Image (cartoon, rainbow, N blue to C red; front, side, top):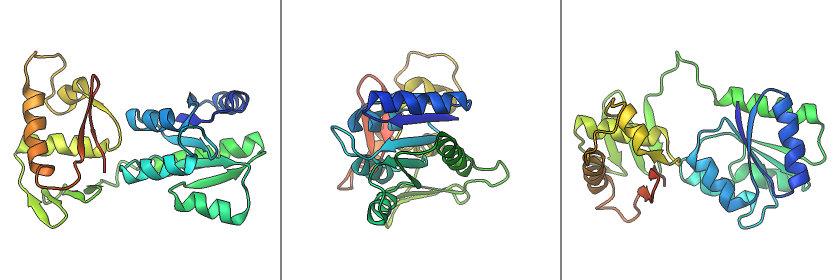
Length: 225
């Protein structure tokens, strides 16, 4: 599994990485709340391991913002704040589990692996509905709506939005869009993506107060609440 460890204490981060790496997992790290949130949004991880007391952006705020933007990766809080009120606060912020420091290495591995299995969706259980903020897509009826407003999309626009919604909270590159939406395995050097993104943005954002589709300068696009 791919695990993102967001921990500002280098010694603790190295300790956690060593435990999870020895258990066979691919581990990346971030040392503050802002960079941790960016990494969680930019790349697909199976589990987030988040310290509560982070510089720049506290762990509680990080997880809450990630969830509000549509991020679905399971999150495990690590914290020396271990009383019931603190654990409940962490779970209400959007965490899936809470482990108090100090902890046994084998318990950390077990909890991470349980969350990773929970994230995996069996192939025989198809996803039929996607939701990011107040934007909803029904894959069976091919109906798209934002709040009470029905949105009519052309087939390619529908496929583009579906891909963006399936990767909500993550930065989607032009290469990813060309391969997954247009089935191009090369860059045709056209503005086809820009044109469709512009049309899609006009339909899902223009008449609404809060935009969902963001341009990530120099990287791609991100759909988030």
